[in-house]
Length: 265
Ligand code: G3P
Ligand code: CA
Image (tube, rainbow, N blue to C red; front, side, top):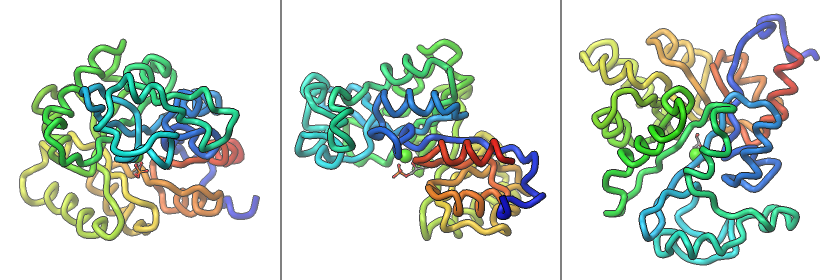
């Protein structure tokens, strides 16, 4: 169609399902991951947290209300208690069988059928001590885990902790909102001038929020050797805009729309 100009023809980009195919099934559930794989995505993005008994689960919010029938803080409950909850009905009653998955259950289901981007949020809680190391252990347990599982965080300390523990792990740095402009400059400049190239080389991508991007910023990040994965445009119009800016991948709730675009290009 008309908004897809010649410049996009044959252009490669990665399709990343945000919290699974979260526009089509309840976010961060096995149903959303299976749906994403069915669409044929390149990668699934998901979020992780600790339970009260320090098991790693796939869950976005700090509290249970928005995406389950539970109440209160996730880390006040044991895994067994959280497993009692319904993590699907809020989205659609037909998903009432969906439970909060452990990271192991999610990775075992996906099993290398596409890549996985695990997001570690900044956790100001003592039981998140060694959290990145624990995740690296989970990656190691999966067959060829280093190949298809990648860690990302806004918090560079988790990225550095993961690399200190095991330098084979793949990582990406996330950026958010207003912070993006100075952060883009920071990474571009440090990689250029301050001799932190080694650390930055392990951060192969910068993943900014899509409203903060411009053609020039994407160009600058590319010029310094970073890939750019942006989140989370959910309309075809915004996706086309991002592709015109030359991003390498798009993290979206509607990977089906992006797949249709790929098939047209
Ligand atoms: O991958 C980027 C994106 O997931 C960050 O925002 O709140 O959806 O986890 P959020
Ligand atoms: Ca996320």
